[in-house]
Image 1 (tube, one colour):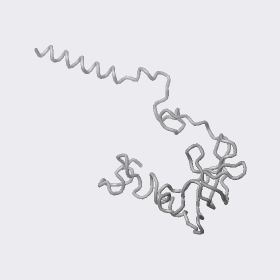
Image 2 (cartoon, rainbow, N blue to C red):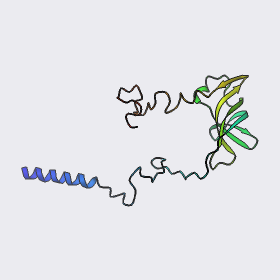
Image 3 (cartoon, helix red, strand yellow):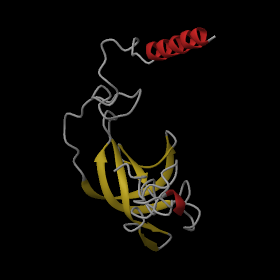
Image 4 (tube, one colour):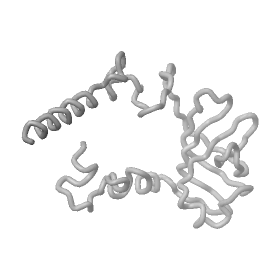
Length: 168
């Protein structure tokens, strides 16, 4: 009986050791060693060749949806407007078709002709001007509690160190 148990134990240890070997990854670098270009598992982004040039612009026009994103078309250019999403229900008249004047910082969208990403710093609508410069720092995936959600715990998570669960 003891010999049978020892034989079964040795068989389990051998199977466990064999299944832990990376047989299917013969000529690959270990995960996280550069093969993903920092984009995460399964994504590949080409290396950017030119630096991003950011300039301060003022754009005036009607809000519309272009490819599912809020945008303003001005001449032949399309400005994809980045306004904090939580403002859409609270600023009166901020909806599709509204005429707005937006000041902010724009940069070209790579690989899309005549398209720019515009981060709004001020928004003028219906005779009122809203300063949006303070809203970007308080809302977002890393805003507020620094890393809360998706098991990050946040500063209130009760763990020593808080933040990202001592991963930094």
